[in-house]
Length: 166
Image (cartoon, rainbow, N blue to C red; front, side, top):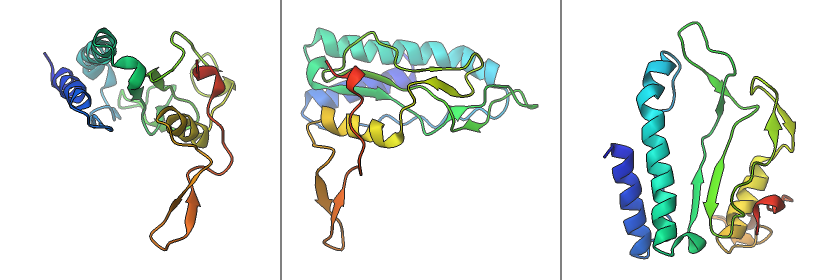
Protein backbone atom coordinates (compact mmCIF):
# COMPACT_ATOMS: atom_id res chain seq x y z
CA UNK A 1 0.00 0.00 0.00
CA UNK A 2 2.20 2.72 -1.36
CA UNK A 3 1.69 5.50 -3.88
CA UNK A 4 3.63 3.52 -6.47
CA UNK A 5 1.58 0.41 -5.66
CA UNK A 6 -1.60 2.41 -6.25
CA UNK A 7 -0.24 3.69 -9.55
CA UNK A 8 0.65 0.19 -10.79
CA UNK A 9 -2.80 -1.09 -9.78
CA UNK A 10 -4.38 1.78 -11.70
CA UNK A 11 -2.13 1.00 -14.68
CA UNK A 12 -3.26 -2.65 -14.67
CA UNK A 13 -6.90 -1.60 -14.49
CA UNK A 14 -6.43 0.81 -17.39
CA UNK A 15 -4.83 -1.93 -19.51
CA UNK A 16 -7.65 -4.29 -18.52
CA UNK A 17 -10.14 -1.65 -19.70
CA UNK A 18 -8.43 -1.46 -23.10
CA UNK A 19 -6.08 1.50 -22.72
CA UNK A 20 -3.16 0.80 -25.03
CA UNK A 21 -0.42 2.90 -23.45
CA UNK A 22 0.07 3.76 -19.78
CA UNK A 23 2.99 5.60 -18.20
CA UNK A 24 3.71 5.63 -14.50
CA UNK A 25 5.92 8.59 -13.70
CA UNK A 26 7.88 8.98 -10.52
CA UNK A 27 10.13 12.00 -10.34
CA UNK A 28 11.57 11.04 -6.99
CA UNK A 29 14.58 9.01 -8.15
CA UNK A 30 16.85 12.00 -8.72
CA UNK A 31 18.97 11.59 -5.58
CA UNK A 32 21.78 14.13 -5.82
CA UNK A 33 22.08 14.09 -2.02
CA UNK A 34 21.28 11.75 0.88
CA UNK A 35 20.61 8.78 -1.39
CA UNK A 36 20.84 5.96 1.13
CA UNK A 37 18.15 7.08 3.61
CA UNK A 38 15.77 7.73 0.70
CA UNK A 39 16.38 4.39 -0.99
CA UNK A 40 15.81 2.51 2.25
CA UNK A 41 12.07 2.98 1.80
CA UNK A 42 11.81 3.56 -1.96
CA UNK A 43 13.55 0.39 -3.16
CA UNK A 44 11.32 -2.09 -1.28
CA UNK A 45 8.23 -0.17 -2.42
CA UNK A 46 9.43 -0.20 -6.04
CA UNK A 47 10.31 -3.89 -5.91
CA UNK A 48 6.89 -4.80 -4.53
CA UNK A 49 5.02 -2.59 -7.02
CA UNK A 50 6.95 -3.66 -10.14
CA UNK A 51 7.00 -7.37 -9.36
CA UNK A 52 3.37 -7.16 -8.18
CA UNK A 53 2.31 -5.61 -11.49
CA UNK A 54 4.10 -8.26 -13.54
CA UNK A 55 2.70 -11.09 -11.40
CA UNK A 56 -0.80 -9.59 -11.49
CA UNK A 57 -0.71 -9.32 -15.29
CA UNK A 58 0.59 -12.89 -15.55
CA UNK A 59 -2.09 -14.30 -13.24
CA UNK A 60 -4.81 -12.54 -15.26
CA UNK A 61 -3.43 -13.87 -18.56
CA UNK A 62 -2.53 -10.36 -19.73
CA UNK A 63 1.28 -10.42 -19.58
CA UNK A 64 1.84 -11.93 -23.03
CA UNK A 65 -0.09 -9.04 -24.55
CA UNK A 66 1.32 -6.28 -22.31
CA UNK A 67 4.79 -4.75 -22.47
CA UNK A 68 6.11 -3.59 -19.09
CA UNK A 69 9.29 -1.49 -19.03
CA UNK A 70 11.20 0.15 -16.24
CA UNK A 71 13.53 2.72 -17.71
CA UNK A 72 15.05 6.06 -16.77
CA UNK A 73 16.70 8.78 -18.81
CA UNK A 74 20.12 8.30 -17.17
CA UNK A 75 22.13 6.01 -15.04
CA UNK A 76 23.76 7.30 -11.90
CA UNK A 77 27.40 7.99 -11.14
CA UNK A 78 29.22 4.91 -9.90
CA UNK A 79 30.63 6.90 -6.98
CA UNK A 80 28.70 8.77 -4.32
CA UNK A 81 29.23 12.55 -4.45
CA UNK A 82 30.20 14.86 -1.57
CA UNK A 83 26.51 15.36 -0.65
CA UNK A 84 25.91 11.63 -0.23
CA UNK A 85 24.10 11.31 -3.56
CA UNK A 86 24.68 10.19 -7.12
CA UNK A 87 24.50 12.42 -10.16
CA UNK A 88 23.50 11.81 -13.80
CA UNK A 89 25.63 9.29 -15.67
CA UNK A 90 24.74 8.49 -19.29
CA UNK A 91 27.48 5.90 -19.85
CA UNK A 92 25.79 2.90 -18.21
CA UNK A 93 22.35 2.09 -16.82
CA UNK A 94 19.82 -0.69 -16.63
CA UNK A 95 16.41 -1.27 -18.15
CA UNK A 96 13.92 -3.99 -17.20
CA UNK A 97 11.54 -5.47 -19.78
CA UNK A 98 8.72 -7.94 -19.08
CA UNK A 99 5.80 -9.38 -21.05
CA UNK A 100 4.84 -8.95 -24.72
CA UNK A 101 6.98 -11.82 -25.92
CA UNK A 102 10.11 -10.96 -23.96
CA UNK A 103 12.21 -13.99 -23.18
CA UNK A 104 12.18 -13.87 -19.37
CA UNK A 105 15.09 -14.32 -16.99
CA UNK A 106 17.89 -12.84 -19.05
CA UNK A 107 20.63 -10.36 -18.39
CA UNK A 108 21.98 -8.81 -21.59
CA UNK A 109 25.25 -6.94 -21.36
CA UNK A 110 27.39 -6.01 -18.41
CA UNK A 111 29.36 -3.15 -16.95
CA UNK A 112 32.69 -2.85 -15.24
CA UNK A 113 32.94 -3.68 -11.54
CA UNK A 114 31.88 -0.18 -10.43
CA UNK A 115 29.00 0.17 -12.92
CA UNK A 116 30.71 3.04 -14.72
CA UNK A 117 31.08 1.77 -18.28
CA UNK A 118 29.49 -0.90 -20.44
CA UNK A 119 31.91 -3.76 -21.04
CA UNK A 120 29.73 -6.22 -22.95
CA UNK A 121 26.90 -5.76 -25.45
CA UNK A 122 26.23 -2.03 -25.42
CA UNK A 123 22.73 -1.09 -26.56
CA UNK A 124 21.87 2.24 -28.17
CA UNK A 125 18.75 4.33 -27.49
CA UNK A 126 17.70 3.59 -31.09
CA UNK A 127 17.92 -0.17 -30.44
CA UNK A 128 15.73 0.29 -27.36
CA UNK A 129 13.20 2.25 -29.43
CA UNK A 130 13.30 -0.37 -32.20
CA UNK A 131 12.68 -3.12 -29.63
CA UNK A 132 9.71 -1.31 -28.09
CA UNK A 133 8.21 -0.56 -31.50
CA UNK A 134 8.63 -4.18 -32.61
CA UNK A 135 7.04 -5.52 -29.41
CA UNK A 136 3.98 -3.29 -29.79
CA UNK A 137 3.53 -4.34 -33.40
CA UNK A 138 5.08 -1.41 -35.27
CA UNK A 139 7.80 -2.05 -37.83
CA UNK A 140 10.73 0.06 -36.54
CA UNK A 141 11.84 0.70 -40.12
CA UNK A 142 8.49 2.17 -41.13
CA UNK A 143 7.74 5.89 -41.33
CA UNK A 144 5.19 8.28 -39.94
CA UNK A 145 4.14 11.61 -41.45
CA UNK A 146 5.45 14.67 -39.63
CA UNK A 147 3.68 17.99 -39.19
CA UNK A 148 5.26 19.22 -42.41
CA UNK A 149 3.83 16.18 -44.29
CA UNK A 150 7.26 14.60 -44.73
CA UNK A 151 7.76 10.90 -43.99
CA UNK A 152 9.99 10.44 -40.97
CA UNK A 153 11.53 7.14 -39.84
CA UNK A 154 10.80 5.82 -36.38
CA UNK A 155 14.46 4.77 -36.19
CA UNK A 156 17.16 5.19 -38.78
CA UNK A 157 18.98 1.86 -38.88
CA UNK A 158 18.63 0.12 -35.53
CA UNK A 159 17.14 -3.31 -35.17
CA UNK A 160 15.34 -4.76 -32.13
CA UNK A 161 17.50 -6.39 -29.46
CA UNK A 162 17.24 -9.97 -30.69
CA UNK A 163 18.26 -11.61 -27.40
CA UNK A 164 15.11 -10.20 -25.75
CA UNK A 165 12.71 -11.68 -28.28
CA UNK A 166 11.30 -15.17 -27.75
